[in-house]
Image (tube, rainbow, N blue to C red; front, top):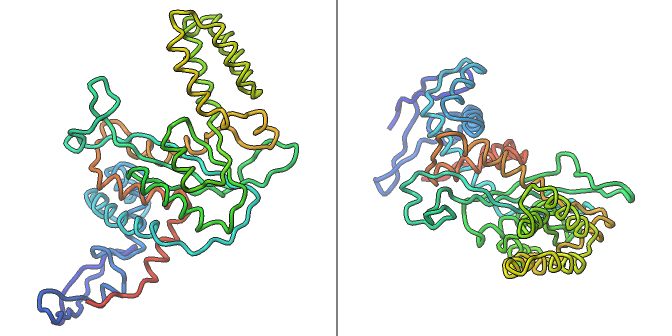
Length: 365
């Protein structure tokens, strides 16, 4: 069939064209070779679709449309930002899940940091899910995030993250798929097994993921989280924020900083009142479980980071800034696809994604 009309949306405005449609042998489908050659996405050129996807991933769809119009002079309905954001996000997710070519970088030290944060889903999508709320119901859906970056340590100097060396992995899926995704990103970037340091809080899923996929890594519990635990432990002795509480917490944090875990246990057990001893022993289990991950004196001597601030910041910039604004409730599908775009953007791989998309050969019908 010839001369089938279509409007192609480009960065330079709309173009009306007529193109041929070829019917497949089965009679139920067909193809437009021109659309495939131009790599159109719902009638939008890759350059325009990429810009729309970028804007959709940065802010609320209505504001994205306003900013897009102000910057380009083109008028695109806000609903198109949502629809195209999902289409582009699907492609971006495919790109991020590609089996990687072996990496060639050989940095002296690599950090892998893991954390999680919640994103609000529509109420109907949370029905039946267990959560941490007072009623036992889930209020959010967990997004797991990993940050990978490199360091070139200088003896005698504090650790310093290499500029522009951070890439991210994020998913709304469970731990099972998340671990291989992090490992794939590691393999995409690095050759061999450089010195690897894994950082996270005390969540069991983090350390199981590290054990399975980075068994050679040096494991460190975030010092700030450990300090918060000591603050809660000190509350069993003195009221929070009292002068005595601050003094006791400082004393215990200093012991932890210097790697004196046994001295910390002795001091805590001596300070805990008998009526709080059971709760105190339960609190100390955290430090016993992660004893080997809390050798902060040794870690500082070796020049390692002992805080997971990079991935905690990633949770805010990657997830919270876009998905946790006031009044937002997402479908899991919409969140998933926009998350893929944001991950590619913040990892400085968004242009690589479009180069990959544009290089794909048209598929036969």
